[in-house]
Image (cartoon, rainbow, N blue to C red; front, side, top):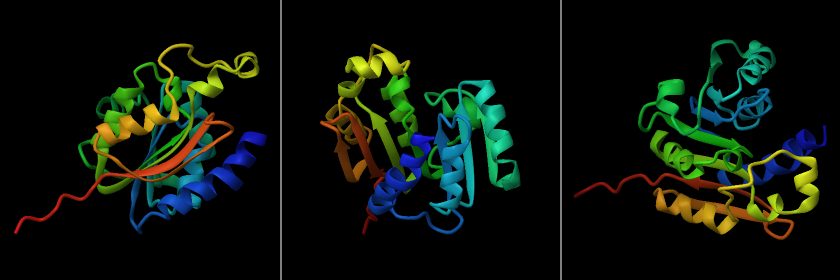
Length: 196
């Protein structure tokens, strides 16, 4: 599929350039995992030791389970919302070394709540790898004819990056493509300074 080819050979390269591979033993989380292709990339290309993944759609969780069965207990899948990862995955504060968003946040009406959850679950020094579709793309007639996306609560690249900063995440690098239609980047949760 063209989307998977683009993800594997372009988007992943950009995200690796900005955020690098994960440290050995790293625990990652993917929001909106769909069929599990992104989680597979997180394991294979980013080197995660474990991936927890969540999706609203139980059919997608079932597909992801089949795709990721060979990884055994390195993968945990749950049906639930990216805006409430505590309920979905019992995800505590600071329990993840990385969170991955392969184009899901723009589907979430309360997308700011999803960013707040990403920040909450990231450990200090943890990274948020994101690939997003912005309001510019979603407003294009061709995009509206080809894809089913929300028509409200859209964000520009600038609004998305501003929300990351508002939630205490520092962007390590980002890039927009096609007149700001697509945003790829990595943000980190700062490590608190040691006192005296």
